[in-house]
Image (cartoon, rainbow, N blue to C red; front, side):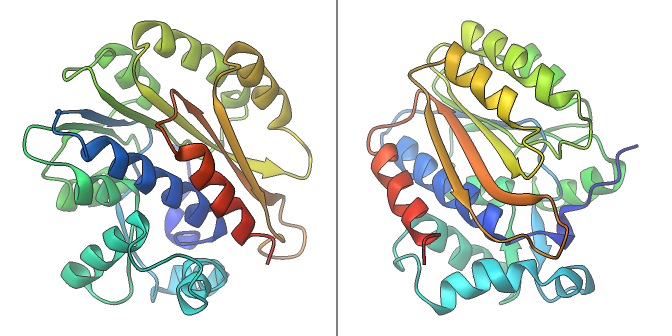
Length: 257
Protein backbone atom coordinates (compact mmCIF):
# COMPACT_ATOMS: atom_id res chain seq x y z
CA UNK A 1 0.00 0.00 0.00
CA UNK A 2 1.35 3.40 -0.95
CA UNK A 3 2.29 5.64 1.98
CA UNK A 4 1.81 9.17 0.60
CA UNK A 5 -0.43 11.39 2.74
CA UNK A 6 -1.28 14.82 1.38
CA UNK A 7 -2.14 16.17 4.84
CA UNK A 8 1.55 17.09 5.23
CA UNK A 9 1.50 19.11 2.00
CA UNK A 10 -2.04 20.50 1.64
CA UNK A 11 -2.21 24.15 0.72
CA UNK A 12 1.42 24.33 -0.38
CA UNK A 13 2.72 26.29 -3.37
CA UNK A 14 2.02 23.37 -5.71
CA UNK A 15 -1.59 23.15 -4.48
CA UNK A 16 -2.02 26.88 -5.02
CA UNK A 17 -0.95 26.54 -8.68
CA UNK A 18 -2.98 23.39 -9.29
CA UNK A 19 -6.13 24.49 -7.50
CA UNK A 20 -6.17 28.02 -8.91
CA UNK A 21 -6.19 26.60 -12.44
CA UNK A 22 -8.63 23.81 -11.56
CA UNK A 23 -11.10 26.26 -10.00
CA UNK A 24 -10.80 28.53 -13.04
CA UNK A 25 -11.61 25.65 -15.39
CA UNK A 26 -14.60 24.59 -13.30
CA UNK A 27 -15.91 28.15 -13.09
CA UNK A 28 -15.77 28.41 -16.88
CA UNK A 29 -17.41 25.03 -17.51
CA UNK A 30 -20.24 25.60 -15.04
CA UNK A 31 -20.99 29.10 -16.35
CA UNK A 32 -22.81 27.45 -19.26
CA UNK A 33 -26.19 25.81 -18.57
CA UNK A 34 -25.08 22.40 -19.82
CA UNK A 35 -24.48 19.42 -17.52
CA UNK A 36 -20.99 18.02 -17.14
CA UNK A 37 -19.02 15.12 -15.71
CA UNK A 38 -16.17 15.59 -13.24
CA UNK A 39 -13.70 12.72 -12.78
CA UNK A 40 -10.65 12.33 -10.54
CA UNK A 41 -8.20 9.45 -10.61
CA UNK A 42 -6.47 10.15 -7.27
CA UNK A 43 -8.92 12.11 -5.11
CA UNK A 44 -7.30 11.86 -1.66
CA UNK A 45 -9.36 12.67 1.41
CA UNK A 46 -10.82 15.88 -0.01
CA UNK A 47 -10.61 18.05 3.10
CA UNK A 48 -7.58 19.10 5.17
CA UNK A 49 -6.96 20.97 8.43
CA UNK A 50 -4.11 23.45 8.13
CA UNK A 51 -3.86 23.63 11.94
CA UNK A 52 -3.12 19.90 12.15
CA UNK A 53 0.22 18.53 13.44
CA UNK A 54 0.94 17.26 9.92
CA UNK A 55 0.57 20.68 8.33
CA UNK A 56 2.45 22.35 11.17
CA UNK A 57 5.34 19.89 10.85
CA UNK A 58 6.20 20.81 7.27
CA UNK A 59 5.12 24.47 7.22
CA UNK A 60 4.22 24.10 3.54
CA UNK A 61 0.75 25.60 3.90
CA UNK A 62 2.19 28.62 5.70
CA UNK A 63 4.48 29.24 2.72
CA UNK A 64 1.64 28.55 0.29
CA UNK A 65 -2.03 29.40 0.67
CA UNK A 66 -1.60 31.20 4.01
CA UNK A 67 1.02 33.55 2.58
CA UNK A 68 -0.95 33.98 -0.65
CA UNK A 69 -4.06 35.07 1.26
CA UNK A 70 -2.11 37.41 3.53
CA UNK A 71 -0.42 39.07 0.56
CA UNK A 72 -3.53 39.14 -1.66
CA UNK A 73 -2.01 37.07 -4.45
CA UNK A 74 -5.52 36.32 -5.72
CA UNK A 75 -8.49 38.69 -5.90
CA UNK A 76 -11.34 37.95 -3.52
CA UNK A 77 -13.58 36.91 -6.43
CA UNK A 78 -11.08 34.45 -7.88
CA UNK A 79 -12.76 31.02 -8.27
CA UNK A 80 -10.32 29.40 -5.83
CA UNK A 81 -11.00 32.06 -3.19
CA UNK A 82 -14.73 31.59 -3.60
CA UNK A 83 -14.41 27.83 -3.14
CA UNK A 84 -12.10 28.27 -0.15
CA UNK A 85 -14.48 30.75 1.50
CA UNK A 86 -17.40 28.34 1.07
CA UNK A 87 -15.45 25.42 2.54
CA UNK A 88 -14.24 27.47 5.51
CA UNK A 89 -17.75 28.74 6.19
CA UNK A 90 -18.81 25.12 6.53
CA UNK A 91 -15.75 23.45 8.08
CA UNK A 92 -13.87 26.19 9.95
CA UNK A 93 -11.20 28.81 9.38
CA UNK A 94 -8.31 26.35 9.14
CA UNK A 95 -9.98 24.09 6.56
CA UNK A 96 -8.46 23.65 3.13
CA UNK A 97 -10.31 21.92 0.28
CA UNK A 98 -8.75 19.25 -1.82
CA UNK A 99 -9.83 19.08 -5.42
CA UNK A 100 -13.02 17.10 -4.65
CA UNK A 101 -14.42 19.90 -2.50
CA UNK A 102 -13.28 22.55 -4.93
CA UNK A 103 -15.29 20.67 -7.54
CA UNK A 104 -18.23 20.33 -5.19
CA UNK A 105 -18.41 24.11 -4.86
CA UNK A 106 -18.98 24.49 -8.60
CA UNK A 107 -20.96 21.38 -9.53
CA UNK A 108 -24.70 21.81 -9.96
CA UNK A 109 -27.72 19.50 -9.88
CA UNK A 110 -27.49 17.43 -13.01
CA UNK A 111 -23.70 17.33 -13.01
CA UNK A 112 -22.07 13.96 -12.26
CA UNK A 113 -18.86 13.30 -10.29
CA UNK A 114 -16.72 10.16 -10.10
CA UNK A 115 -13.87 10.09 -7.56
CA UNK A 116 -11.33 7.27 -7.30
CA UNK A 117 -9.14 6.72 -4.22
CA UNK A 118 -7.38 3.43 -3.53
CA UNK A 119 -5.84 4.08 -0.10
CA UNK A 120 -8.30 2.71 2.51
CA UNK A 121 -7.87 5.46 5.12
CA UNK A 122 -8.00 8.24 2.54
CA UNK A 123 -11.03 6.64 0.89
CA UNK A 124 -12.81 6.38 4.25
CA UNK A 125 -12.17 10.07 4.95
CA UNK A 126 -13.28 11.00 1.44
CA UNK A 127 -16.55 9.12 1.89
CA UNK A 128 -17.41 11.35 4.86
CA UNK A 129 -17.44 14.54 2.78
CA UNK A 130 -18.12 13.39 -0.80
CA UNK A 131 -21.75 12.32 -0.73
CA UNK A 132 -22.24 14.32 -3.92
CA UNK A 133 -20.09 11.88 -5.94
CA UNK A 134 -19.82 8.28 -7.05
CA UNK A 135 -16.84 6.89 -5.12
CA UNK A 136 -14.54 4.20 -6.49
CA UNK A 137 -12.03 2.37 -4.31
CA UNK A 138 -9.90 1.21 -7.19
CA UNK A 139 -6.99 2.22 -9.36
CA UNK A 140 -7.88 5.64 -10.72
CA UNK A 141 -6.64 4.97 -14.24
CA UNK A 142 -8.78 1.83 -14.41
CA UNK A 143 -11.78 3.88 -13.31
CA UNK A 144 -11.14 6.58 -15.89
CA UNK A 145 -10.59 4.14 -18.73
CA UNK A 146 -13.79 2.27 -17.83
CA UNK A 147 -15.98 5.38 -17.57
CA UNK A 148 -14.67 7.50 -20.45
CA UNK A 149 -16.40 8.82 -22.37
CA UNK A 150 -18.66 9.66 -19.44
CA UNK A 151 -22.27 10.74 -19.38
CA UNK A 152 -22.71 13.70 -19.60
CA UNK A 153 -20.04 13.79 -22.29
CA UNK A 154 -18.99 17.36 -21.55
CA UNK A 155 -16.59 17.67 -18.62
CA UNK A 156 -13.25 17.43 -16.90
CA UNK A 157 -10.86 14.70 -15.77
CA UNK A 158 -8.17 15.50 -13.18
CA UNK A 159 -5.17 13.18 -12.96
CA UNK A 160 -3.16 13.94 -9.83
CA UNK A 161 -1.08 10.93 -8.71
CA UNK A 162 1.43 10.94 -5.87
CA UNK A 163 4.13 9.64 -8.25
CA UNK A 164 5.34 7.23 -5.57
CA UNK A 165 5.32 4.59 -8.32
CA UNK A 166 8.11 5.75 -10.63
CA UNK A 167 6.56 3.80 -13.50
CA UNK A 168 3.77 6.41 -13.54
CA UNK A 169 6.05 8.77 -15.45
CA UNK A 170 6.32 6.26 -18.30
CA UNK A 171 2.70 5.10 -18.17
CA UNK A 172 0.91 8.45 -18.00
CA UNK A 173 1.48 9.54 -21.62
CA UNK A 174 0.01 6.24 -22.81
CA UNK A 175 -2.93 6.51 -20.39
CA UNK A 176 -3.70 10.05 -21.52
CA UNK A 177 -3.41 9.12 -25.21
CA UNK A 178 -6.02 6.38 -24.73
CA UNK A 179 -8.31 8.66 -22.74
CA UNK A 180 -8.03 11.46 -25.31
CA UNK A 181 -9.01 9.06 -28.10
CA UNK A 182 -12.03 7.85 -26.14
CA UNK A 183 -13.07 11.32 -24.93
CA UNK A 184 -11.89 13.80 -27.49
CA UNK A 185 -14.04 16.63 -26.11
CA UNK A 186 -13.04 16.18 -22.47
CA UNK A 187 -10.82 18.64 -20.63
CA UNK A 188 -8.06 16.31 -19.41
CA UNK A 189 -5.82 17.83 -16.72
CA UNK A 190 -2.58 16.36 -15.40
CA UNK A 191 -0.62 17.69 -12.43
CA UNK A 192 3.05 16.76 -12.03
CA UNK A 193 5.94 17.76 -9.77
CA UNK A 194 8.98 19.54 -11.17
CA UNK A 195 11.96 17.68 -9.71
CA UNK A 196 15.64 18.46 -9.41
CA UNK A 197 16.53 15.08 -10.93
CA UNK A 198 14.34 15.89 -13.98
CA UNK A 199 12.51 12.57 -13.68
CA UNK A 200 9.39 14.31 -14.93
CA UNK A 201 10.97 15.76 -18.07
CA UNK A 202 10.60 12.80 -20.50
CA UNK A 203 6.92 12.49 -19.56
CA UNK A 204 6.28 16.17 -20.25
CA UNK A 205 8.21 16.00 -23.52
CA UNK A 206 6.08 13.02 -24.63
CA UNK A 207 2.87 14.85 -23.75
CA UNK A 208 3.96 17.95 -25.66
CA UNK A 209 4.81 15.81 -28.66
CA UNK A 210 1.59 13.78 -28.56
CA UNK A 211 -0.69 16.75 -27.81
CA UNK A 212 0.87 19.89 -29.31
CA UNK A 213 -2.34 21.84 -28.76
CA UNK A 214 -2.26 21.25 -24.97
CA UNK A 215 -1.64 24.04 -22.48
CA UNK A 216 1.44 23.48 -20.31
CA UNK A 217 1.78 25.71 -17.23
CA UNK A 218 4.78 25.51 -14.89
CA UNK A 219 5.90 27.44 -11.82
CA UNK A 220 9.11 27.24 -9.82
CA UNK A 221 9.64 27.75 -6.09
CA UNK A 222 12.28 26.97 -3.45
CA UNK A 223 12.36 23.45 -1.99
CA UNK A 224 10.17 23.04 1.08
CA UNK A 225 13.25 21.99 3.08
CA UNK A 226 16.94 21.39 2.36
CA UNK A 227 17.44 18.45 0.05
CA UNK A 228 13.77 18.25 -0.96
CA UNK A 229 13.55 17.30 -4.62
CA UNK A 230 10.40 19.17 -5.68
CA UNK A 231 11.12 22.69 -6.90
CA UNK A 232 8.03 23.43 -8.94
CA UNK A 233 4.58 22.47 -10.13
CA UNK A 234 3.31 21.65 -13.61
CA UNK A 235 -0.07 21.29 -15.27
CA UNK A 236 -0.89 19.89 -18.71
CA UNK A 237 -4.40 20.67 -19.95
CA UNK A 238 -5.88 19.05 -23.05
CA UNK A 239 -8.75 21.02 -24.59
CA UNK A 240 -8.09 24.06 -22.37
CA UNK A 241 -11.13 26.32 -22.00
CA UNK A 242 -11.17 29.80 -23.47
CA UNK A 243 -9.13 32.23 -21.38
CA UNK A 244 -7.20 29.59 -19.43
CA UNK A 245 -3.88 30.43 -21.09
CA UNK A 246 -4.16 34.03 -19.88
CA UNK A 247 -5.15 32.88 -16.39
CA UNK A 248 -2.17 30.53 -16.31
CA UNK A 249 0.16 33.42 -17.12
CA UNK A 250 -1.34 35.46 -14.28
CA UNK A 251 -0.83 32.60 -11.83
CA UNK A 252 2.70 31.96 -13.04
CA UNK A 253 3.60 35.63 -12.52
CA UNK A 254 2.73 35.30 -8.81
CA UNK A 255 5.66 32.94 -8.33
CA UNK A 256 8.13 35.55 -9.58
CA UNK A 257 7.56 37.67 -6.47
